[in-house]
Image 1 (cartoon, rainbow, N blue to C red):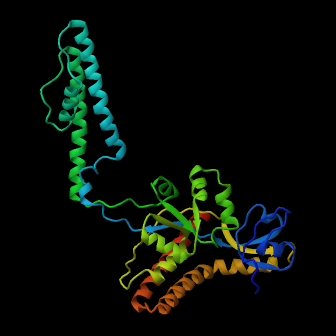
Image 2: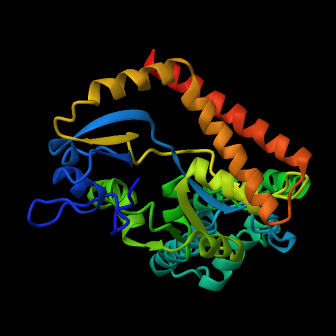
Image 3: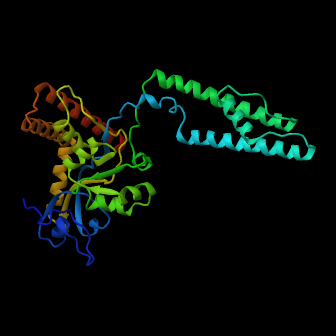
Length: 351
């Protein structure tokens, strides 16, 4: 087994040649390489042996925290609704003032001041309105319309406030790339090995505005630095699921299975599948495919996956002097169940 000197999967250079492992296959310096993701460009210069579907990408963030109780009074409405209420109070008050001002100019009778209109609008919203300021029929109709609006707003606010005081609210979970983009002052990153080759091509060539923004602001850092940033808050780590689950179980989970991290429920696929790259015309390609078919049909690939993950978790915890037999058995069972669920989903998709 030889490691590529550039430690890269392979990117297409300006001269039409690939770097990394792809370049070795293209030049026939090697017969085959392990763990390669197919792309349209790569399939033109090498043969490919699909071994398994690619791992899903997930978003790792801090678990949702309890929101401060001091904000319970403003939590029933979103910022947009509160802004709309404030604008509505001002607009309605100005309309009433102008309407009564025009009536006053036409009849010579006293109208309504802007301060009086604002006081009434705000008081009606709090169900403590002062005396009706309207002086004609059109003003009374405008007041009646505002009272209906206040009734709807107050009813919605009161019921929502009761529910927020009854159940402790928590911050929102980040389950998709859209959630990351919508959060103010939020940043995200991934590891260097996960952001090159086919994965980098996926993000850099994607046409969706959300994925474009994710790519533009993506930070590349090591997993230890990334997890520290996540613990510090307002940062998410975008990485493949099996990889991050093993790390969290190894280093950031106590004997009771408690961890400060939240792994998104939604998953997205950046790569179609994983497999081995073969140089063009390799005579052993048919034998490799036959062996792979036997391994897959016997269920050995999924079995090896969950066994390797469980062993990695156990080894890492022992190295960190956090080994706990019961916890390792629990984590291994959890990984086994997850792997079985993935296998069932793959079978259903193939059917």
